Length: 397
Ligand code: PLP
Image 1 (spheres, protein in one colour):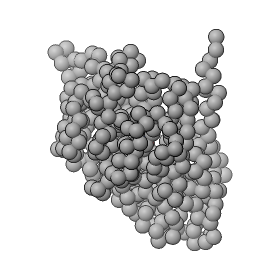
Image 2 (tube, helix red, strand yellow):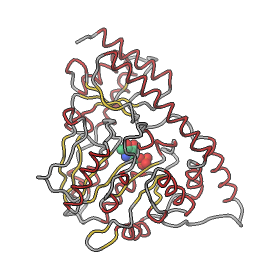
Image 3 (cartoon, protein in one colour):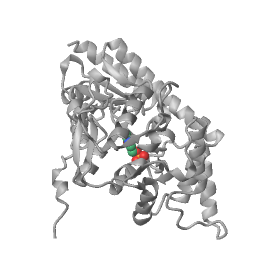
Image 4 (cartoon, protein in one colour):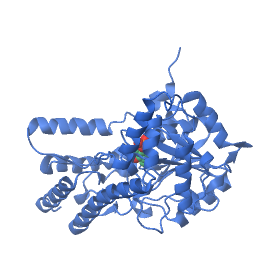
């Protein structure tokens, strides 16, 4: 009997464990000192009323024999698939409900989708990156190539025609850098994928934070993408579903490789390994698309984006270089004074009681950067930014 030897190749993910350890040590040394947490990527505002009401009603349905539901359809209930398709349609992106697959948050599907691809494919992943893309491929034994996301390319790597890849990960708006691809840039990726017969796995978990109407919220806004891309979306950050768990994956009917359509292949995989998202949760997710739901989630997103604007303004005033914060809840800043990610993390924690996320934890190109998130409360975000400014004045270099 052998374990999966590929797990031995995984790098220990020290990032959040290290952060927790440092916080614990700080709190032990300074009992009672207030900490401002600007590191976590979790939301803080509660579910909106439209979602809560829809879920309450669904609970009542589950309590009556006539309306009780057992196992649901593997790809999700038609009411939610139709709502997702209609929402794309309103934005001028035709997506039919049977191209939509409901998931329990897009992390599961981003990992699970790899089951339908051969393990000898070459995978192209940006660095720095959301670690799930790397680790899931290493677990499956795939060869991973990295592309540099650095200040020189504004953290938006473009295709290198000399490098061949079969699977390409793109995340826009990006976690951790907050950078957002333009339509022209994505068109470059679509052209590359078509030429190389590759498939783009497009992570749009933060699409609802895009404010600039010129910026794409979906890869399917790009002509030709339906033949070469899968899109992953989530209600987690859009509607506060991080603990409720629901999202969706879009696999266009036109996406075929090796003579096979990928959508039915994915359904075959799902019907074997997955039994769907609870009815109650899918009713809650449907309410996100109702007029009241839309207005209410807009308020929450506006709230977070007002935090981001305040953070961006402070950093500009401090002369700290950063990306993100405009069409993204993440701000990716260059550590002042040439400090390393962990040096600046420690300085902020020790001297200002502010917790960020060390950029080096997202890949080698994250060294020298720190990620801040806009998902906190208004007062704590303001306090955090005041502390960062005060610290900079105390240590100007
Ligand atoms: N993609 C990115 C870039 C993320 O940052 C996250 C969560 O933080 C996810 C996907 C997964 O989100 P969920 O599984 O909650 O939908």
